[in-house]
Amino acid sequence: MSSSSLSGGVPGAGGTGALTSHDALLHLDPQIRLYVLLPITIAMFFVGVIRHNVSKIFGQGSSSGKKIDHDGLKEAQAVVRATRIAQNCGYLSEKGFEKRREYFCNETVGVFSQESKKSNVQQQMLSDPSMLSEMLTKNLNMIVPNMLTMAWVNFFFTGFVVGKVPFPLTQRFRSMLQRGIDLQSLDVTYVSSLSWYFLNFFGLGGVFGLVLGNNTLNDTQQMRQMSMMGMDTGKAFKSVKENLEMIAHESAIEEVAEKRATVILRELNGGSSFMKARKAALLSK
Image (cartoon, rainbow, N blue to C red; front, top):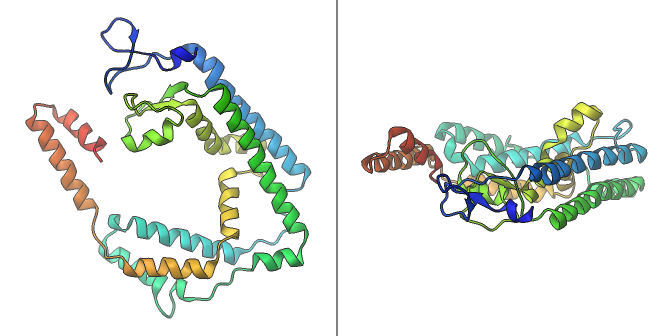
């Protein structure tokens, strides 16, 4: 089975063989679906169910009686939003970016000019000793099962190609979809077994919500909450504010349009059809 996981058939060659071009297609063995893809998905699902039941036993699933730091959550979300605005300001109009910068950086009423209202995590632990043990239990319940499952996938199923995305993707997706496979000639739309594990890790939340109800564990949300709890809001406000104030707005939309127009013209001059030229422009970096 392992040999068939990376063997492919070139269209028109009349059989299987080595990949010789970026357009070469793989003929995946159906047994890979039965013995690699489905076992990973089923194992991830049952691990999530077990973790959900363990969290209920230790009282992690219920939020009744626990005080939620709404101010801390709002401030952390403001930092995340401002960071995204700074990273993607080129896709905003200049007027829209200036309004958002004024909202965050105004010296009198700006969000980052106000004092932080977030409660101190260390003070909370001193006043409530059970909080430390609860955090430790949550971390163990999240980290240990995921580490064991990832080690199991990496040991038994490494090097397998388990599926193919039914739409074209750019080369930037290669590191996300083909973890554990160092093969540049393989089309970027193919998915490796290790990447399939991560897709299940982040994508089964909706399935757990349907099967187990709304009060389920969410790994992404838990990781976000842990990072927010350890964040120094004052330093984060100062850093993001300085970053926003120094940014000079430059439109990225016009630059992208010019690059894609250049690619389309080059493809058309080379004799390609308009649809092929348009596809090449969309796939260009």
